[in-house]
Length: 201
Picture (cartoon, helix red, strand yellow):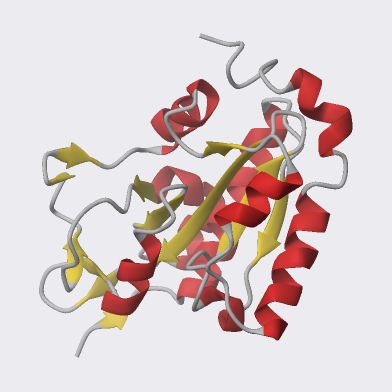
């Protein structure tokens, strides 16, 4: 029976913390909203990230490494189907095998676009899928900075429209809280939206 090397909650926390640290070092002010399991059924990200200074949004669906024969990351069919409606959410597959690797979690992360047909798992030994390679952190950051990754948010209405598929009053309430938290000072920052991500080459 397949089992994870390290619990997904831990690899997700370590990777998220490292990602925050890297972006802070680069001069960004990123806010994170950890998505509750209830909302995750409609918004299939473990975390949603937003930089108010640059109005850039992206989400990550964390996956931890399993072993049983070949190392792999199991995928869920329903989750994958929902994910394909959110091109700004990515699989973040951790290669961590031991807890002592926590301090370099971001170095063990693979970022995959979710634009491929469902399969039971992503094998670790595979370096590309459907001709598309996964990204390491440096390449993923560059894609965020230059706009191929993530999505530019210029208004509250635009963000609400991206999340319109969320159903149920409790989930809609959480979405409104998420939007208010992420966009607290969007109006003050939008004039600087291209200063860092799109301004560097």
